[in-house]
Image 1 (cartoon, one colour):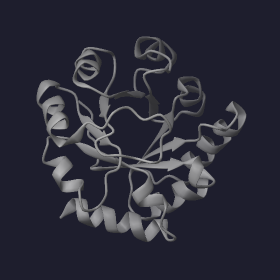
Image 2 (cartoon, one colour):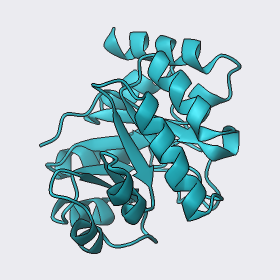
Image 3 (cartoon, one colour):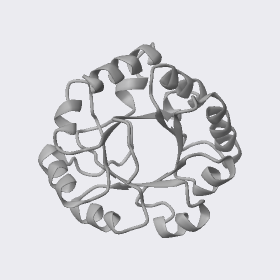
Image 4 (cartoon, one colour):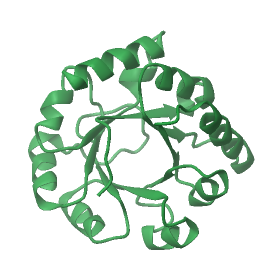
Length: 203
């Protein structure tokens, strides 16, 4: 079972260039950063992932959103897949044995299916209402998140509308980590906000 830092930071291209965002996240103490740039062509995304890998600290991991092929050719730590992306079993054929797969789920049945799929962690959400993803699934809430965490063996990464005020409530449900986009990136000083998050999650 893989170790997950409590903060799973997402450098989302809708908030700007993912590369300086990733740098700010790393400088603030994040050690697991996903490069998410839905609108970017494959060549652009590959270049962004390459750049993020070059500036990542030695103890940090970079995950690529959606694209297992780009994760493979860049040597990223792994890929994060959604329900509409390449199925995990197909992505596993693309990746090396060392690269990890994360998989988004939105209800208990999807999470249970993911628990027996070739994935390393299960993302569950949205826990709360979120504005950073179009067409979001229905909100889970804490009780359903707690049920998911109690029913699966793999680490659960909670995502969706999580803030500093709610993060510990989410972790108390059994989540291994919280994935954060808006509450990190919408602030003027992403590095300082990330440092605040890391301190808060370690307290």
